[in-house]
Image 1 (cartoon, rainbow, N blue to C red):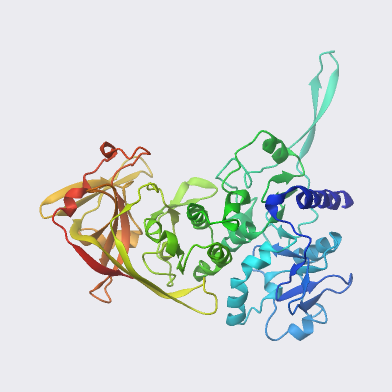
Image 2: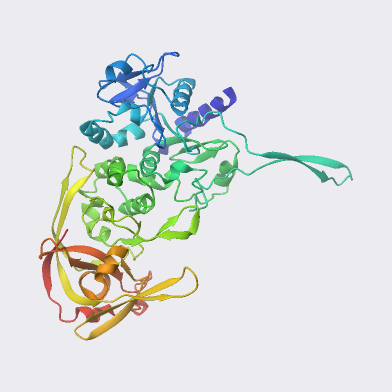
Amino acid sequence: SDKHITKIKNWIAECNNKHPLCGYSTDLSSLPTRVIDVSQSDKPLLFETGGNRGQYIALSHRWDDAQLPLLTTLNPQQLKLGFSSIRLTRRFKDAIAFTRALGINYLWIDCLCILQDSARDWEIQSANMASVYRNSYVTICVSGFQASSDGFVSRPRSKSWEIDVNMPSDEIGRVKAREAIHHELFYGSDQVDTTRNPLSVRGWAFQERILSRRVLHFTEYETTYECDTGTWCECGRLEMKSRVAHDMSSHSIQKYASLFSGTPDLLTWHDVVSEYSTKCFTKDEDVLPALSGIASKVQSKGSGRFFAGLWENDFLASLVWAATDMFDANDFRKATRPLRPSSYRGPSWSWVAVQANIEWKFSYQVRYFVVRVQEVECTVLGANPFGKVSSGRLEIFGLVVEALLEIKTRTGPPNYESRSYPLSRDGTSISVDSYHLQIDTQEDADEADGSKIFCLLMREYAPGKPSDILLLKPDGVSSSNFRRIGICNNGHIGSSMDVDQSFYDVSILFEGATRTEIVIV
C-alpha cells in the first residue's frame, strides 16, 4: 500500500540523514556484474553492467525444492530481452514491484544474476558477496515465508478481537486487542521460532544480513527495518524497546558492525563463527563460500592471511574451539551430536571440519601460549580465495605426550547421560568431566575409547599450569601426521586467573615431556 511504502521511505530517509554509523553516501556505487533492470514497468530484463554505477536493491531469500528460474550459460541473450522465456515466482515478481515502488531501477537476485551452471562464475561472484550486499541501497530479506511461491508484499494481519470490559462508570466498554507480533529475531531471545522465520537458519542468509548496511525484513505480519544503527518495526514495539536501551540479542546486525570499521576485533569473528555454525546448508561444501564475503571484509581491515576459517593474526587462539551439540531451534530438549561432514570441508584443526555448534568457551584472556607455529598451508579450490579448500597442513612445535583415553558413560533419568574421561600416562591417571574435555564427534569418541591418543599442550594459565590441550590421533594416511579429535581445558579459569580455580591437575600428564614438532592435517 502507499502507506506502507511511505513508512519504509521514511525509515530509509532517516537513516540517510541521521545515521553516520551506517555510512550512507550520495555517491553511486558500482553495480554488480549483472542486475535486473526494472525501470520499464512492463518488461524487466537482465543487464550486464560493465562497471556502470547506480543504486540497486539486493534480495535475500530461501531456496526451496521448487523449480526456480535460473540464469545459465544458455539463456543470457534471451533474458537481456526480457523474462518472458522463464516463469518468475510470485516472490520475484513482488521484489520487482517493490523495487520500482521505492524508485530504484535495479534489482539483484542470486539465481538470476549468477550463472548457475558455471563453477567459475559462481566462485567469482561468491567472492564478491561483500560488495554486492554492503553496497546495496537496501536488502530485502524474505524472512517469514517458506516457499518461493509465497509472495511477501501482501501479508495477513495478526489476529484481532474486540473484548467487552467493565468501565469505572459501570458502563460496558469495548477494547480492541490483537495477537502479539513476535520479534525474537531482533531482540531478547536466542530461541528463534524457525517456523515463523525460516530464513533465520540458513547459512547464506546469515552472511547476507550481516554484510548489508540496512535490511528490510518481510515477516509473517509486518515489515521490520534494521540497519547498523538500530531496528524499527511497523507495530512500534522494537522502537519502544530501543528507547529503554533494551539489550539487542546476538541476532541483531549491530553486534557485528565493528567488523567493517577500523581494525577488526577478532573476538567478534569468533562470535560470527559461533552463530554461523548453527545455520543450515543445502550443500555442506558451501560452509566457507557462504562466509567468504564477511571474510573478505575482515581481511581488508588487516587480519592477516585466511586459513580455512582461521586468521593468521589470531591463529593460536582460534585453534582452541570446542564442538558442542546442535540444538533444535524450536525445541532445546532435542540435540544432535557433532558430526563429520560427508565430504571434505577443511583440515581437522579448523572448525569447518565438523558439523557442530562451535564455541570458544574457554577463557580468551589466557594468553600464555606454549607452542610455536612453524608453518600453515591451505590449498584453495577455484577462484575464491576464501572459498573451498582441498587440503590443509599445520606444522607446530610444542610439548606432546602419549596417553590412554577411556570414556565412562553413566545414564540416569530419561534422556540424561553423563560422561567422564580418564586419561592415564605412565601409571598416572586423572579423570576429566565432559564439560572440560570434549571429543569433537561421536565417530572420534568411538575410535578413541580405550586407545592411545596424543596430547598437545597449547597454553597455560600460569607457568607450569596447563590450560588448553588439543587431543590428537595419528592420521592413518601418514604415520608422521596427526588429526585433531577433541580438546581438554584444565578447569574453569576466572577473570582473576587464580591458580586455585583449577579443577584438574593436568600438569602431571606432561611431567618429563619434551618438545617436538608435529604435523596436523
